[in-house]
Length: 537
Image (cartoon, rainbow, N blue to C red; front, side, top):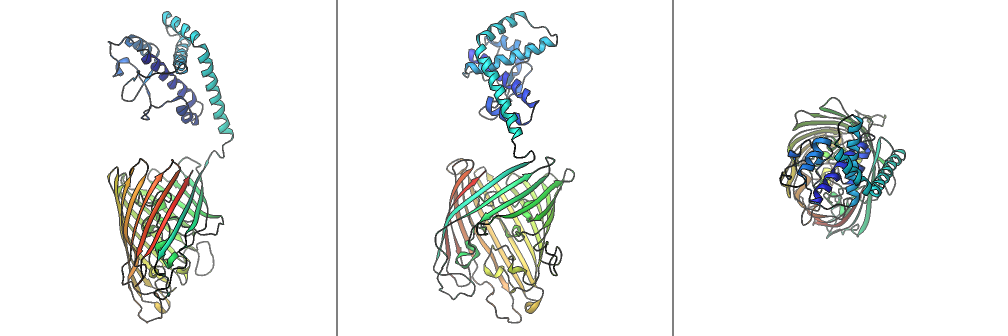
């Protein structure tokens, strides 16, 4: 039963010390919590109680009942857990006991200063205890002073009072195999010349700044050294592919801020995509560090069509607590004032998404996008973000193109350890000028992913994805212009499996394997094996 009284006093000091530091600085709370065990093993915060009857696990038959009643009702210097238990059967050190004693001494001192009546017998008991625990009390005061000094040091040496740094480094070892390349114009049987095992990386550093606590300025630096379209196909690319030959570049400059309670606006000097604004409903495949390793299965191509470094604007509307709408406008060459460029005279994309979120990781969305690419623009950035077979990158040989895109996206968290997600998408493209004027293409793609969170071990993840990457099932050529870009007659498929090993909260290792079937008409499959290691901080 002595343990119950000890725990009583220990809980008291947590309450008093926490309140002391909260009054000085908000940062102190998180430090005090970790230093003084202000949370139990289940992360339940301890709450002040007003009567001993609120403690469900203390009954009048316990010898300490009267002492508990006295402490609570006379001095208010103990705390209990949210489930109204006291849990006093745990052992504690003399330092912890001294901490509890210090809390009650402080509480009684305040009562005396306020002129309240304090029982002399209680004062004598506390005086004797204070003498016995004099050394421990002195040590406690030293620890608190040291902690206060640490807080002051952190405040004085902060990188910034408004900016935080987030980083991610991904290294992947990979190789591509198959009997022949899928490159446009290559004769059948042409061997793959770029399938050797390589080591590639991508590093991102995000500087996130908030001026009001509700807005966010994101500035991203990126560097990488990936080789794209190995084996002559986009189907071999990675979710996190980035070129640049090890050069550091600005990858995103974006500012978002609320307007009222239900509206948020986005301004982007460099890069804005639909998934910046609306949930892509791909909870286990879209993350660069722990999601799909292959590019196509990561998230629907409608989120990737404007993944270029042009400026744009966007808005997010909370229609209800579960229904929201996102819209954006972006321009590939919006910073270029020359003829045929700018915000409104070059390649642009307008996109919107209506999302109904039923619960966490469960919802359905309908997305639409309209884009226009001037002559030659699709040579700078693919129609569908380099996610499909070659005839979807630039269907009309560089001629001006307009497209309408429609997608249905969904995710269903069937249980804590099983999720199904995917999409279906259709694109109608038309040639708007040049020798191909009047030609059109019907482009399709879909995917289904089965994800198994905490598979074999908490924090790990296993997943299998099956889908058909974007392909032009219909592609007219009314004027019989010579071209290698023709309609798809052999429907492509991509199958990927990966497993994420979480070594720590910040380090994961992911083996992955996928196969691209029919990467081009009359071409054998391409195989990719990869081992990704991701570091986040």
